[in-house]
Image 1: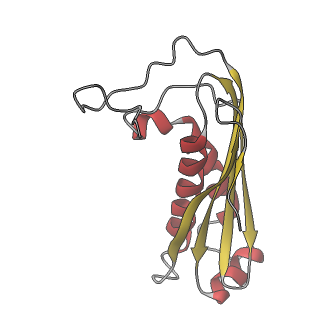
Image 2: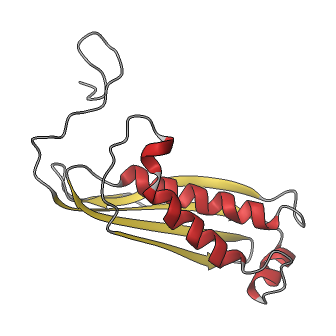
Length: 156
């Protein structure tokens, strides 16, 4: 297996995508934030001291998608042309699903993963004063489309 982020001497490098043509690409990632059911009830009813927890997490995730190359040294600076962060309150957790879209030379998998991760971190930040046991579980890529490898979807 050849690793595209290594040169012939085994040194890290940024992959050169100059000759690639821009194509439509999308990726979806998720994260789960587990917290106390009472905290989830308070979030749902708008009773959290720091304000609208879900709005803050949504904005944090979208902003993070656009800043991915600042965090990951080999990530390309690409146009993030669409980013959505959806949050679903469950009985024991909040599900974060981030979808990022572009029409560029490389995919947006890392942008989607970064959006989901940072949205989850923002949730922790918003609840940590009331729930020190809250934690992030299972950040993962769910699907991607576009580019040379086409469509991919995680099975179950």
